[in-house]
Length: 248
Image (cartoon, rainbow, N blue to C red; front, side):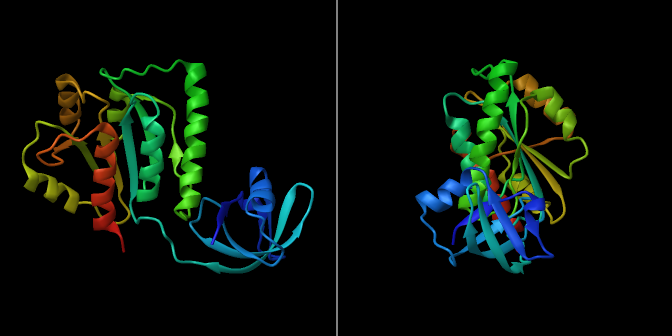
């Protein structure tokens, strides 16, 4: 069943009506060719609930739906995972956003590190963030998420380390880390209700000085195994492990 996101005010619980507007109107009407009476799911992107609706009427710029029932089951992970991703080359960031959204990430923070090849000025950064947010929204729709993960503005590495100081679990995969049992033990600390920070370096990884900055701030080094993973694979690996451990 197709899923769409709307603003909270577009769901009227009193009249049991849902109004869909914007680009989704054309998609529903002319691409999917959905007919009056067909059902779809709607989320407000905030409370994680699924609102089951039926199309009641098309207007010039809206799809008017009748609200049938609200499904309370929350499909979100019970912990809030923040991915701090070193800016990669080309369109890898789009791939990373798409796949980590599918895996349950709550926040994605593009991160500027010393070995980042990509440099974004303010004008380019605003356009990129807007595009990346749309990719997150599309991935949330495809995977039937109840929430739309937030893609934040680019953050310098040192600022990011300071930003996570009060988070419950903080980890940084590091190619010279060797103790897999320590990685298992740290992952086991991830519990429902926590905020979890994951730092992933760009191509070429983190510089040693950056690792030392992270360790000095209490961020824990972890190993992802004996093989060296690409930047676009590393975050997905950690998210998959956390999803397995946290899923209820």
